[in-house]
Length: 336
Image (cartoon, rainbow, N blue to C red; front, side, top):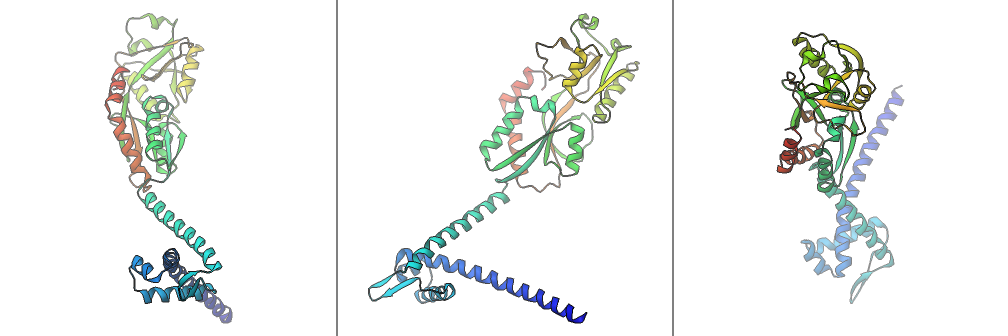
């Protein structure tokens, strides 16, 4: 057993020493390659040493050591000066290629560290995805940082919170109710509220104004408490505050399903005020006078997220969220 342990220890030490030696050779050769390129381009040790800011004897020794490591002469030395051997011309091409690749790798590493290169996983819900500013955010990132790859994930707000906690996404566009606590950093992009969607030929659609009391005994299609628990609870609390008990006919997970179920006569539903109903749908939107549940559309991210590209994305969203054109749009649509 001791013999085997000794052999394994020897193997490990040999590997470590070999790795150190290899790294040292690579670093030495890299410097020597740069020296060789200067000599090969100048074909004069004096000019090359001046260009490299080293002494001529030191440069001569570096090239001599390089030729020894390569195993063949790279320079053709004669009384009239120096030239490149055939092997030297081939080696020069390889040196230039290696040095260019190393410089490109250095620059790319710096850009990654500065957040100019990388991948961002961004979540967004259905409502955020239809807003006018959303594609402008994505376009700004693509134009300003073309080397940042955006991976988009459609998910409801509550699911985005879970994804942020599990580091599945870097940031998300989600809705958060006023006063709702958050463990994350956030940036307000816009505001929204809730309105009632009902069939155009429904009796309530002809009333001049609506209140929560008008919904007594009306079948309602409510947000699914499993996937949108906070919104469901807020709506139920508001109705109970108006002394009515919601008559739940169905649960639904997204606005398209809600609208389709309302059009099919399954009941009435609440949707965000930014919702736009197609002309082909036989439903309409109505405000509820005594219902005010403002929600903020926010860009949200975890404080602990160290993705260097994330601050770049947040900065662009912040700039676009506050420009005059966006503010005017929010005011026009009643979302500001």
